[in-house]
Image (tube, rainbow, N blue to C red):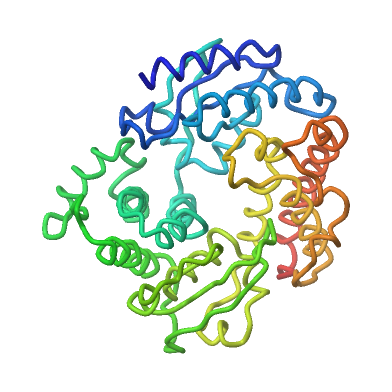
Length: 398
């Protein structure tokens, strides 16, 4: 049933002139559909040069089809939209994520291959820490045991690359479970009926293990601290809570925007996912002993936030989350500050200019602002390259 629905959705989207191919990703591609629970995640490949500036009207047509499809078929989930050049560059930036997507299969249009890329230790670390940004906090807030177990399996598989067990992660969760039992028979993966506290503790225990492999140990510091911060690049206000697992899980902390972290998890998050949060930390958070991430980690985050497909992402990605014009505007601001050797402190979204106030779900964005956003991506990435080249000859600005 899922395959039939996905095929119908792909044919519908494929009628747009700029669409070259539509393919199935994630659960459907890996053969791990859970009926009534799983989404249909799609990938859309555009004809060469159809993703850049001057393509507002064709993208409006595709956006409208996607919106109709989501209304008729609510189980359609995230759709990533690339052209060929962008896809190859995204594989370089996110090789672990795209390794999972190489199980993808064609639903409609011309065949192609998602290129392979050697996964480095930092690449695996970034994917491991990715879960702490949004997905794990939401699962913790909602006490969603099934998702907590899924995330723990993917975290363990990615950590296996850091530890040297794999060159690429196992593609299916069943393969992950089998490998976990084989490599760690004394513990094995968490049981499907494990409690909320057991699953949360497993995720944070993996973070402690990853921290021991990747970063210097943290000095003895405070046991618990929290702060409400405007987290880049979207600058949404989030309650960052750092402390021991038991303290994080006690009580009923279900407010939106809650980011629970152990000190080790938060240190990893700062280094491999979002180093720009470091300059927002109040003294009680710095007392944990977090070190400022190196310049290259700032630059890698900027590359991710200004990849060309990000200019289209909110309209074709998740209905509740996605980077877009504001992320691009923030990245442009942050790159300019780094180029001048300045720290990147708090900023009001209103001070990022008109681009930060655009709604990427409206047709007017693609007609009037998409070209601006796409051009800003290219400008910022060029500036990142200049900063990276200069940092090899001089002391890093950050």
